Image (cartoon, rainbow over all chains, first blue to last red; front, side):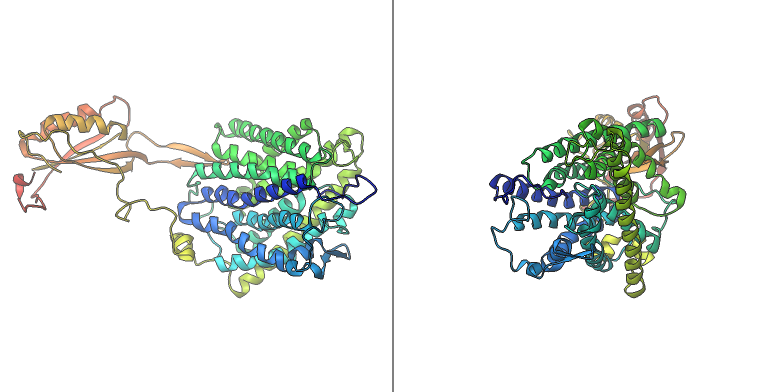
Length: 446
Length: 112
């Protein structure tokens, strides 16, 4: 999140243009959660499709309510000890004037809080991809509520809240490289280290059941991400939001090319899953960086993220952790790359005059970025693992092995994603047209 | 009676159906099948993880026929199914004890 713009000595007035823009951006960010659901949903096997969709969708329900009750207050209220915020007027959003402006900006508090709400919804949903096929839905729902409360709300405060330690240190995180992506990626790693692998990991083929769904999800994410990124400047009076918009497109395009080139050389084919994954890797990496780098810098960030994330998704097989849909490989690695690359590619002409190493700024910013990355990574990893452990020891995190093998959709949701046959038993679908002219000479029938 | 079973390439279905209709067959059963013979499967890659798909999609066509027509019908199917490339499939026949038309209860060759 950007530091408050001080355009003039007097306090900013409400801008209808910025308000409208930000409401649209909020809706765009909302769309990312169902987009993510499809992105993940297409990647699992048929038997866990609905569970994967629901793991994202439930976050819209849970986190929205928590945000109203106390989340916004914790994330953006008055700072205590650089660690957490609180503002009792904001509990239940009960005492916020309709025309009250977000401090230092031209949009109402209500607009700011709903925009930020969409980020809070998306971030826990991102974690779900690592937990495919095997987590009890009740345990997941509780995890989302607890994780939002003790991890996301505080971390959002550190990074974006006035007084938060990363914010005050000068860590550049335009739209959520640390608070959203490193945060979710590290949480995913913490949880899977506790809950373990899927039955049959590395043994059974677990190919994505619907790559068209994955592509649809990636497309929705890309679209929604313009709101996520460009909207994070909370207005566009100085053109920085537009720079972010451009860089979002540019880095994502470059990352698609980077991922595809790597996998063509390494594995011999340009895959749709690679293209979709490259797009997400680029979106993740440009998220912290896009307000600080030039479009050429965005190409560099995108290519680097595309190639390195494509390499990183293989690590789970080497180290034996089941990051099912590569939340660590894409969001943690991409988030770290984007956050650190700011230290090299910041031009000093974007969101702030801080320049990175390649633009004569030395390594100062790079070390600040490292502090932000490590702080969020370590906190989220440890606390998420502890939460998972607590839930596992009490209600249990995983479904039974039988349910997992038979399919979590029917076990947890009493539904299956697709009806493959009118007879309900998987009969053949090939249509055979009736014979055109019954011949009398030979009596042959099936 | 004989049961002729053909396991062939899916895209030959229309050719085979037309050939059988021309021969006078007015009923058959088709199922989607998968398997392998000399034609092996292929390899797919998802984020670098390779999956060998051993089983090749095929269709299985089943036709009941009177004994005298069996050999000729097999020839018709083979001719229509053939592309000359590996993986064209197999056709075989088995003796059938009886057959009943469900609607009328006719038995044996009358049921065909």
